[in-house]
Image: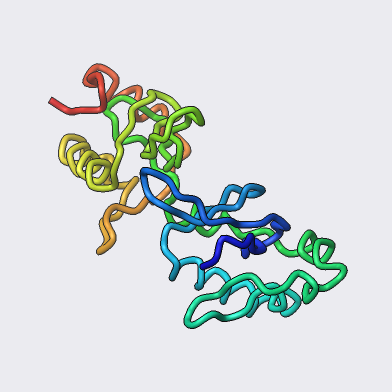
Length: 197
């Protein structure tokens, strides 16, 4: 792709993307919404999707070989930015629903665990599963699911919270009296760091 700036293919974004050379890996990035693409195919897919969803987006791009590149600015609709600003925002609920909220698998904790892309700290790039109550964390699904298996083995009453599937453990929700059950049965056995001994 040429260095010529191109309209960002992210919904609702009226920004521009440019190719950025970086020692940690080159990428295409938008300075307005912050979206990045590390692979040309991913950028092509994003453009293909946006122009199939919104017809007025198509004049912003043209094919060069198998890749999409910026079309001349004069082809862009006069009311382009107004049209884009009225697009539907991406549905982030789908990702949240897929990842789910889990009852914390730390012994003695009745908090909830959710996946955070920044580990709850925007100053650090530290993704993982984090509990809003005890603060325990697991950096990968593998470690998180392993902890769930360990706590179920230790306390069978926890089987009501999780279901094992081909994709790993899935949440079943939080019983209304869960805090009371945990406080009564588990508090003396809680150890630091979410590990069961």
